[in-house]
Amino acid sequence: MADRFYLTTAIFYPSPSPPLHSLYEAIGADALARYRRLSGADTRFLTGMDEHSAQVERQAAELDTAPQELIDGWAAAWRAAFDRFAISYDRFIRTTDADHVLASVEMVRRAMAGGDIYKGTYSGWYCIGDNEFKTDAQIVDRRCPDHPTLELQWLEEENYFFRLSAYQKRLEALYRDNPSFCEPEHFRREVLGWLREGLRDFSISRAGGTWGIPFPDDPTHRIYVWFDALTNYLTGAGFPDDAEAFARWWPADVHVIGMNITRFHCLYWPAMLMSAGIELPKQVFAHGFMTLRGEKMSKTRGNVVDPEDAIAQFGVDGTRYLVMREIPYDRGGDMTEDGLVRRYNAELANDLGNLVNRTVSMTARYLASELPTLAADAPADKELQVTAAALVARYHEAMSGLHFDEALAAVMELTAAANGYAESQAPWTLEKRGEAGRLGQVLAVMAETCRILGHLVAPFTPTAARALHQQLGTPAPYDERGAGGPALATLLEWGGGAPGPRTTGAAVPLFPRVELPETVG
Ligand SMILES: [Zn+2]
Image 1 (cartoon, rainbow, N blue to C red):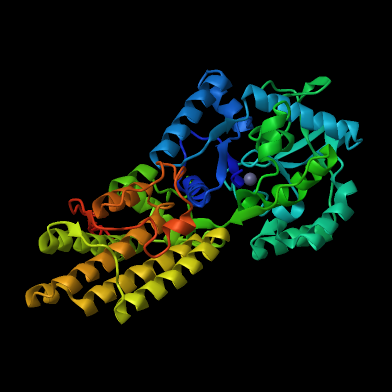
Image 2: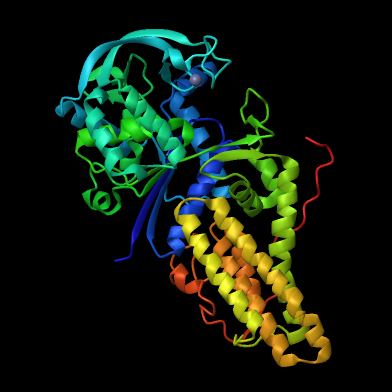
């Protein structure tokens, strides 16, 4: 049976439509899902929305509508945006889904049965922006630094607690035995710091209210955030009722999350699973955030990039490529509009786009679109072949570590090497001299490098990659989600997929140039 791979994003905080930084998380996870499918793994990709937020209840009240109705509209808009960005999820989970409600209740019941839930009084400053009580250390100028426009609220209430403190030793053992449970290392260090400070029990219910999953055996309470939200990863694998699916998909290979929720995924979540007697996921991978001109993107700062504007400028593939190439996934980073335009033009329009375009148009002009079988045994041909093999190896290593920027750097190096080859072998000169045999081989080598490049960029620019392979006369042997083809290792071999004599298609620019914006941002 084929390998299987189960990955998830976090479920997103509800809003009328996804901001670009949520899409950033989803695009990275999607590139990984596509890469795994191309590599031959039966892949399940879960994403979705965390719907039981106080924000939804409040907004629905303001709009005089039911929370469910409000959130149905938002979820539809998110799905549409994800589809537009070619996010190839298998399920868009919503925490109001019926099977999820069952899963959530089952997780609370298991923790209860294990003696890990008790009733206590909680009081503290509470931020409604991220739905959590804030410790003194987290409060700056009497505000939550992440939500400076919101007043903190002093809340005191009876609710149910999860005995996280009982898992101190077991979590210490987890990180001793399996340090890569939380990646990358710079975020793991932060988690280990919290672990050293000592774990405190956390509250898992809220009294009153109607928006949320009723707490088992106490309908005066609702299950609060963690036993609701985190449990989605189990629901998406078939928990608790579909034993066959659950055996197939759990444990997850990786939970991709934002760096602001490592505490919950790297400490709360494994303890909850231990309490329920469920195997832990193999890894939690936290990504950094994108900033725009040095500032965190946020509505309050008014510097949110509208995903539709990005598409209008760079296209779907161009936007996907740019955010993955420009901003290291593991650390996050800054972008500027000028920087994006420059990179798009340099790498996609000029280097890659032009390489493909001149390969296909010269084949049309000089060879009447008939490429000969690849033989390619001149020293320059072999040198490019060796370069390709080395860069493909680097690409695989980067992809499996979710270092997408480095994977794309390897792609661009191979592109540059192929353009250098074209300059040094000068097919236009061979044509003038009437060296038909060599001319055919040089173009076959260029086409072969383009074919390999197409598979390498397919997880990032799936539509352009398909067009690229079409133009080369080697249509992609997998479906639009990257599934169903021969293993990527075979496709990436020099001469793999047997590029024998074939007819190439019409040359159409893959990435039209973009003009620099006139106003300097
Ligand atoms: Zn906050």
